Image (tube, rainbow, N blue to C red; front, side, top):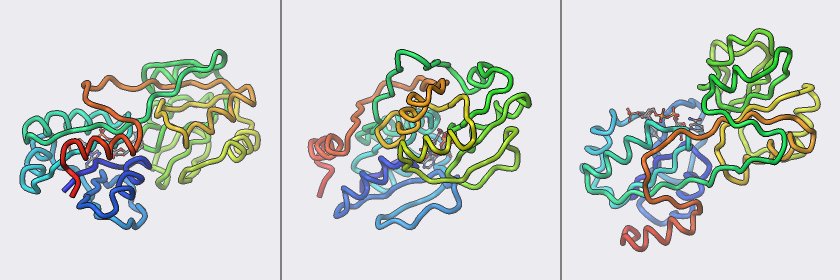
Length: 240
Ligand code: NAP
């Protein structure tokens, strides 16, 4: 069995590409309305690195693919420890980070720094995800269009919440920004092609981007395409 740590579109695409294989995709279980998928899924934490190591041993997993979001740092750290403990080959599937535009791109190290960097009166498209809104709730002098895949949390930053599932086109992102008279975009540096449409739209409209850069993670073997993961799995004799 190949265990894929998911919660991302890349994990979904990898599971589809492995259609005829014994695959299990693991989700944290944070979204209640996760769509039905044509592959096996499990939901909920493992109980730390120890729990994941145990899971790998009990299920006899032949490979562990960490395809979580680049900001899911705890899960990725646990994967490194657990794979070493269980002796399971580990690969991270992760797109390269986006590179900065020459103008209108402010890199910050944390969500808190992103919140502090906004000028008073800013109208912000906030695309950091529903679980990362906390640091922005104190900015009562700004207005936020907070966007997330799941339903709105109880407390949101001043403004409104939009529940929407990607992908989004550059044209629809541009329309959204213009409709809400957005002056700033805040994003996590997730990387990847599908999600960069908001960056292109912001650049074309001259809207500054406040980019939260990725957390530091242990260095592990990493690929950024499905094809490369399939080749790696073949090299590890993990494919039937
Ligand atoms: P996190 O802080 O790194 O993980 C916290 C805990 O949640 C982990 O220790 C683990 O619990 C559990 N967990 C996380 N991902 C899991 C998975 N795929 N399968 C089973 N358990 C998982 O993670 P997060 O940032 O809250 O992200 C949660 C999920 O949302 C991840 O699957 C991630 O890919 C997805 N996601 C995150 C972001 C983001 O910005 N962080 C954006 C888009 C999607 P135990 O220790 O009990 O095993």
